[in-house]
Amino acid sequence: MTDGDSASGEPPDEAVPQRRAAKRDLALTLIEHLEADELPLSAVIDRIETVTTSPSLTREILDTAEKRGLIEREEGRIRVRRGGSFVRFEQQVVARDGEFTCQRCGAGLSTGHFISFETGELGPFGSDCVRKVVGRDD
Image 1 (cartoon, rainbow, N blue to C red):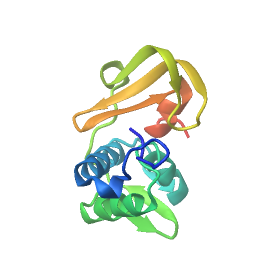
Image 2 (cartoon, one colour; image 1 turned 180 degrees about the vertical axis):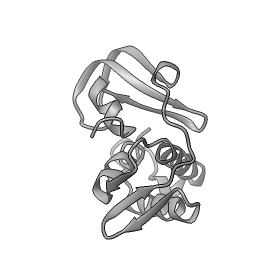
Image 3 (cartoon, helix red, strand yellow; image 1 turned 45 degrees about the horizontal axis):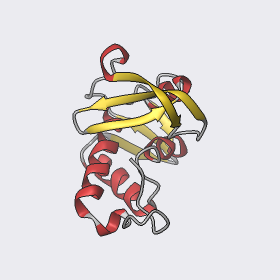
């Protein structure tokens, strides 16, 4: 998933409420599945940016996560509240061969790793980035 922009001919997320809501829900699901107990705000934003680069949507995602009790914000740090489950790599991460660009770091990939959630699919990522996105490796 990428943000729409005028260069691609797609309207921005703000112009399509359903797409904005789908991205918000996918980012919230990712936050629910983070394996780290606490992260700097910048690290949480790094993960949200795998779903959207819209600053207003990023703020909405963080505000919604806090209202739902998924996170607590304190002095530039985010405490993740347990309750969700971790990503099960054997079941939820699918590797596909092809030509991909990592959604996190921008590297070219011959194998893309995709995280499958009920709210949608996130990726592609390289093998290291997929672990960082879910907080397994920092």
